[in-house]
Amino acid sequence: MSVPEEGPGLVASLVLALCLQSLAAQPPARSAPDLVQESIRLLQANQPRQALPLLDRAVSLDPNNADARAALGQVLLDLGQPDKALPHLQSAVRLDPSASPAVFNLGVAQFDTGHAAQAFDTLSRLAAREPGELATRSYLARAALRLKRTDAARANLLALRQMAPGEALLHAQLVEWCFQEEGSTLTRDQIQFTLEHPLPPPQEARVRYLSGLLYWRGHRAREARADLSQAIAMDAREEYYVALFKIQAAEGNDKVDRSLLASALQKYPDSRDLAITEALLKMASSHVDEARQSARRLLEKYPQSADVYVLSGRINLGDLSYDSAQTDLERAVALDPNNAEAWYYLAISVLRLDKEAPALSAFEKATSLNPSYTEAWLDYGRLLYDRGAYQQAGPAFATVIKLAPEMAVAYNLMSQTQRKLGKPEEAARYLAQFKRLSTQPASRQ
Image (cartoon, rainbow, N blue to C red; front, side, top):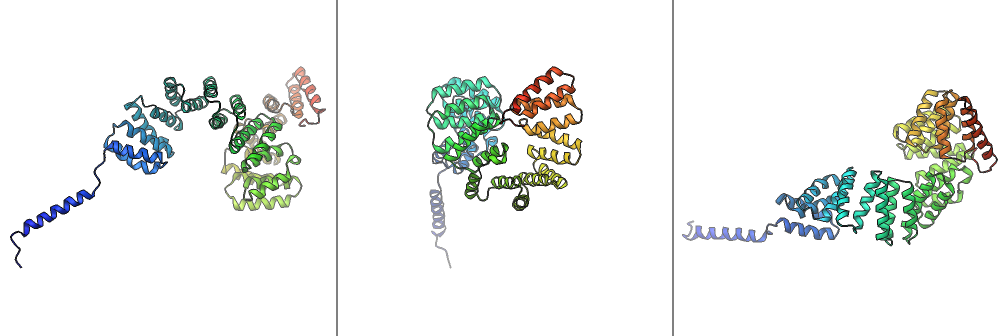
C-alpha cells in the first residue's frame, strides 16, 4: 500500500497536536510563593499533613524563601516534630528577622528540643519588641520555669495576669506548666489566681486536681482531699479517683471511701490502678486470698506492669512470704528502675530476710528517687540506727520531721539518736516534742 505524499506531514501534524494537547492538560508549574499560599490555606483548614509536601517542594525550589521556611517549620511543629522544624525556623529568622511568628515558633522549637536557654533568649528579644503578645509571654514564663529562673518566671506570670486577667483557659494552661516545672510557691499562686475566675468544668477540675496533688506534696492531706473531691464532682476522671484513694489510703485504710471506690470501679471496670487499690484494701481487711487472686488476675492482664508486681510483693509481705515478696519486687524494679515504691518494699522484704546491706541500698534508691517519701526515710533511719550509724540516722530522721512535722515517732527516734551522739540537750528537746505530739489523737505515732 502506498503512502500519500502528504502522509508524513499529516502524521507529524497529528503528533504535534497530541503533544500540545497533553501539555495543555498538565497543570502549569507552580512557583514557591504559589505553593506557600496553597499550604497556608491548608493550614487554616487544619490540614498540616496535606500542606507538608507542598512546603517541602517550595523549599526545594527556593531554599532562601523565608515564608516557605517559616511555614514548613510551623507545619513540622504542628505535627510534633520540633527537631525537624528547628533548622527551617532558624533559616527563616535568619532570612527575615522581623517575622514575629517565625521568631516565636523558633523559640517554641528550641524549648521543645531541650534548648531552654536559647528559647529564653529568643523569646525575651521578641517580648521586648512586642511586649503585649500573650503567647510569647506564656512560653517565656515556661522557659524561665524550666531554667529555674524564679524571678523571671514570676515577672512574666504577673504580667500575664495584668494583661489578660479574664483569659481563664490561658491561665489554666499556665497552671499546668507551673506544676510540671516548679510545683511549689509559684504554682500555688497561679492556681489561686486561676480559680478566682470562671472556668469550664473540665478545666476547673484539672486545676483542682493539680492543686490537690500540690497540697499532698506539702503534706496537707485535708486540703488535698477537698480539692480532689471537687475535681471528681466536676469531671470524674480515673486519675482523679486514683489520686484521692491514694491519699485516703496513706492516712489509713479505714479512711478510704469504699462506696466511692465501688462507684469508680463501676465507671472504670478495666482500671488497673483502681483494681490495685481494691486489692490492697482486701489485704488490709485480712481477705488475703481474695487480694492474692486479684493480684494474679492483674498479673495475667498486665505482665509488664511494675505496679502490679509491687502489689503482689506487698501482699506476700503481708502474708509473711518474704522470699516470694523479694522475687516480685525485684521483678518490679527490673521493669521500672525509677519506681520508688518498688525499691522501698524491696528494702522491707530483704530486711525481713536479714539482708541489711541490700536493704540499705534499696532504701537509698527509694529516697533518692522520691525525696519526699516519708515512710522510706523513716525506715531507712531506723535501719541506720540499728546498725549504729547514728551520724547518718540523724539526717534521715530530720528529713522525716521536715516532711511530716506531726509524726510523733520521728521525734522519739531523733531523741534516741541525739543521745547516742552525746547531745543530751538536743535529745531532751526532741523528747519533749515527742511527748507533746503523743498526747494529740491525730498524731502519726
